[in-house]
Length: 388
Image (cartoon, rainbow, N blue to C red; front, side, top):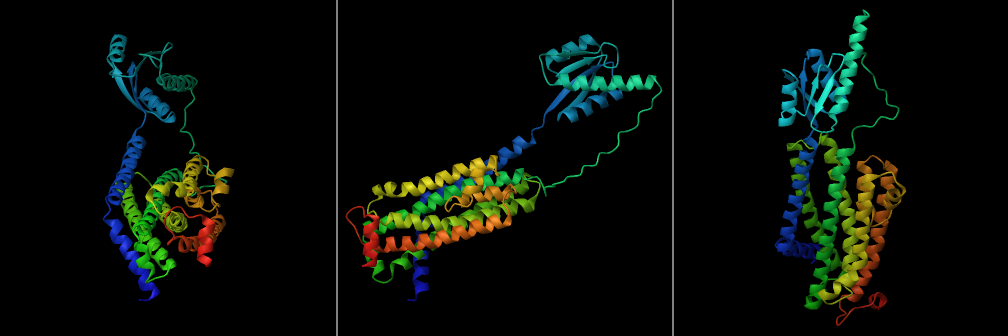
């Protein structure tokens, strides 16, 4: 069988084995539910607007307009209700039919009735002031004209609101972090299972270690990519259907960016996980050799959360070029518009160079330690065994 055929055979075996794994199926369902839940939460929290109901005694259309304009300036939707007298106003406030009531808003002694201190005080105060100024000008024979339309000129205009894109990128990083750990552990567990059961001895009688490693990483990588694309399709479809984002192109672009960084990050971490796992022969010993790599992932995830708050910070900028951290940090900076094209290019180039180095060294460790059983193999011993 050709080299390509052997790699394809191992990859197909990994895909068929893991696709039936209950842990893989359960994790896929949990991640999909997480994505849908976040979208629903975003929809509910984003769709909740501040509103208030204000009762008016002795009002007119100009009072209603002034209150609504004052509320709009404060970011509050104001509903105006006409009331008959002061007693009716007090009763409406006590019963909760209105949030506040204003008495004689255009007179000399306007009064605000509220159950307790609230933001309605500022809204009514602003409206009463505007009505008073308009009345005094009218007494002097001054006819008010509509205010001119304000034209805004941005010296450094942004293409669009980056907030939703950052949220999408951060959610994508959460999924990316989970998948990198999940599939990295799949690779590591597969390596140890083959060593402990001596299956690897049969496999290496027909193929080279690097072919086995390549097939394992490729197969699980394809499975991870399919899972990520499925999650992305569900997420994008749900976001557009629920109208969570207002710029579909921005959403799709951010999702594609996350998928691209998954491919780069997976190639790096899968090679490290496989090489580390080849040093042990029991599942119980996996934790000790995988901890350093897992901690690197955790650090990248924590920094990505910080980058979402301040994508232009020194920490976010520097770590977006560090191999292993960049797949989690750079997507957030890109979504926030803080990463120039050349920064992305440099980060990708550094990551590809790191992958080449990890694959070369990891492949040697994998080849040298794969047939060594009976305990934990030291890194130096694995490299010497490969050269021998």
